[in-house]
Amino acid sequence: METIALFTISALLLSALWVYAKSSKKAAPLPPGPFGFPIVGYLPFLRPNLHHQFTDLAHKHGPIFKLQLGSRLFVVVNSPSIAKEVVRDHDAVFANRSPPIAGRIGTYGGRDIAWSPNGTYWRDIRKLFVREMLSSANLRACYEHRREEVRKAIRSVRSRTGEAVNIGELASSTEIRVVERMIWGSTLGSDEAKIDQFGAEFREIMGKYIAIVAEPNISDFFPWLARFDLQRVEARMEGMVKLVDNIFDPIIKEGVRIVSEKSGSTTKREERKDFLQILLELKNRDDNAGKSLDFQAIKAMLLDIVIGATDTTATMVEWVMTSLLDNPEIMKEVQTELEENVGMNNIVEEIHLPKLIYLDAVIKETLRLYPALPLLLNRSPTQSTQVGGYTIPKDTTLFLNIHAIHRDPQVWDNPLEFRPERFLNQTSSGLDYTGNDHRFLPFGSGRRICAGIPLAEKMLVYILGSLLHSFDWHLSEGEKLDLSSKFLIVNKKSDPLIVVPTPRLSNFELYQ
Ligand code: HEM
Image (cartoon, rainbow, N blue to C red):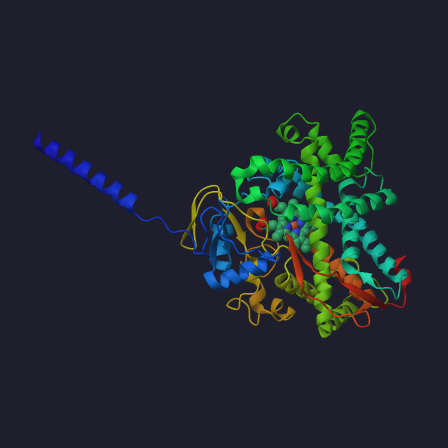
């Protein structure tokens, strides 16, 4: 009896000790960071170029720091090793986003791919997009769209010989037409005028849309003030959403008509389905996939794809051309590579693209120094997690500052120099777009990596290769090259790049 009592008391004592030891084990602290005042948090004005300011703060506070802004906690990661912990070791926990309030309203309640929370809905729509629109087979089948649109771009430059060209506008109108033809080309019957009209209308509202989404609102920092602030943001965003609806609704209506006509017809129509028609057919199904797709979800997805593809690609074409004008000897080298692999009695075709190794390195070097999304899109952990030796509480908004990582002197030799060769040597073999080497993440990494890489990569090399093969480029008399940027989620040039082409090809008939 005594032995049992002694045993029970010892067991109780040991468990009490274990519980005490566990509870007194210190949780990792929050990351360091600049001083924040009670209630308002960190006060210095956050400059328009947020990524530069974050990089300056990283120099003071280290590879991971926190910022209290209002009642919200923000954490910024500035080193490859901590980025790896976030997107590889804890990718599932950090696969959520924390959309800004305007972004959520502007995407029909966050029903797009980019802002949807990690879950079945996001997985389904992302898979649908990658499988139906960007599969290798579909990209191959849509080559004609890319070919025609790039040729059209070159013809339009040629027809205005001597006139200065706005490179961003040229790239953006080319990219948007390629994407339009993939998403609703069959619905519009490849009606050139309509494709041009919708593209032009969309590009007109896109700049304003992005600016409004990028502008922070008071309820982004003080969620408890939402009931005073939300109505104002809603009113503003709903105006934008209406403009998007005015463009999308008539096309979707036409898609619905075609899909129902096809389903009622006994003879199979031969033409390819576009992405919109695939979505509309799925929506009509009675299974889970069909049930989660309504018109708003479809519009949110299309919006994401058009904006996600156009603004990033055009911005990068502009930064590559800017970097080449800043380094004329590198531009010459790209042109020599084009002469050798394409020839001057020929035009660039996609078959040539894998041979343009040096141009590929130039694009990568530009993505290193001027990534289109220098803070990627934010992440948010679904549970409190330890990263870099610090606690990141649940629901924190976390940024991976690739602007700092891509310019870190501990990672890159002479990081501010434009040297494409660094992507050609032995040590650079993992430096691709897969996000597996955490020194170089222009398209992000992990589950939330950019969903459009296969198209982005093709279009960047194809547009740039064609522009540089067909023309020499120089600034207008007296113009100075400007390398400054403005950050609106996408890191754009402050001033558009406007340059003058001189034809290099003797036979432009090839572009007819
Ligand atoms: C040069 C061109 C492009 C760049 C630099 C770029 C970059 C990025 C980055 C950095 C992200 C966030 C990744 C992360 O959070 O880890 C992203 C997300 C995304 N991108 Fe791209 N992108 C480009 C082109 C495209 C194109 C052409 C499309 C579509 C056709 C596209 C569709 C998307 C989508 C849907 C997402 C959201 C993915 C998700 O949250 O699951 N992007 N992109």
